[in-house]
Length: 504
Ligand code: SAH
Image (cartoon, rainbow, N blue to C red; front, side, top):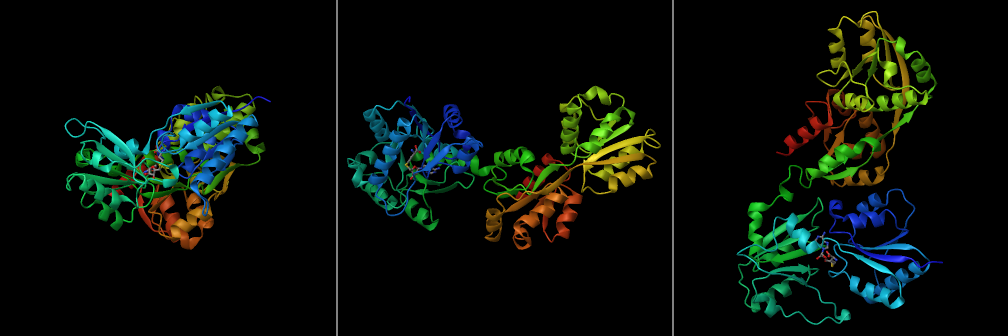
């Protein structure tokens, strides 16, 4: 059997966007991941996708000495490599910056195991960057010192000469010492650093929940204690901290730190979630619904005579995708509908059609059934014509009833239904009840209904709701939810615009 390789990989400080391309490649091709507590687990799961990878958590557990654990980790890496496996040893930040990566590399070298080192963005550089603090700045600091505030006697480290560090103009970046901060401050003051030197503590740097506490060398330890700062946190000492006033950005984003539940179906959630994250939100995904295609027979029979219809009406992206797949299964494509006029309920649906080479002839002003009917009412080519309406089984009757009132001959073909998904509902329910959620986004009435079913009425009512439009708002209110804001335009962009006004 060929021997495997161990990759000592830095995962960066937490923000998934700060993972390196090499780290991503390795996570997508490895057999095993050995990781510890500082690694963002959500990011890890996302990077591994659904792949069958053995995950070994080797973070702190109670009652175990650090050196015993370190020995176990090194033996695990050697054993897995000898079994021929491709092993990613994933560490927070950079593996060689206070990460014991050097010791693991030594152990691998000694055991004759091939290894590779993949640097990561260290918290001591990323944290200040996300706090708007450049670690060097002309006129303020010509050097940076990365230093541990916590010297583990077990590691046999040489003591830090705090007096020497106090006498330079270097920016000091203190890893670890949340508890030892008062001692470090005392040493620096005794060494001659001015008491009014600006200082900052950055907790959970680069995560949506990042907190930055500002003070001076004289006040920072008290301020951190008053704010109950917890690990992981990094402390920055130096005049550069003063630059945050001007260049703070992360904590100023419109939705910074807002904890928002996204209830859309898994397949559709990503664009909304990504945009909310970009605006600073802490997104909690809980797909309330899932789309379940129905018996394809009726749709297939309708498609067989599709050119005979005058109109085809699409009221969701799901309908577009299911109809397209059914068309392809019959060997059909956009040309089949060449003589059929097409109406789409909204821009996203129209875009989905266009992705398959079909441009909608009608897209209403407001993206609801009533508005689409108004748009069709003004035309002289609806009355007496044949309309195919492939759609959700549980949709409202507004559309077919309205079309019939306009004199059209309507064939409604149920092609899918939305069912409750509710993955992760227990976790979200607990957060709602604990008051740990600021807002829940609802993008359809069925989402509202299934969200309440999934988390339970009491939990659902614990947080206000942002709704995509009037129909969804009415459904939410009927369920006893409090609608804090409603999108003016019933699109994802409209929903996001509404959310940002709420914050201001
Ligand atoms: N190898 C890591 C450091 C490991 S030592 C790196 O290069 O970043 C652990 C210390 O790193 C923590 O106690 C804390 O001081 C710092 N740290 C790591 N991630 C952090 C984060 N997201 N926010 C603040 N500090 C962090």
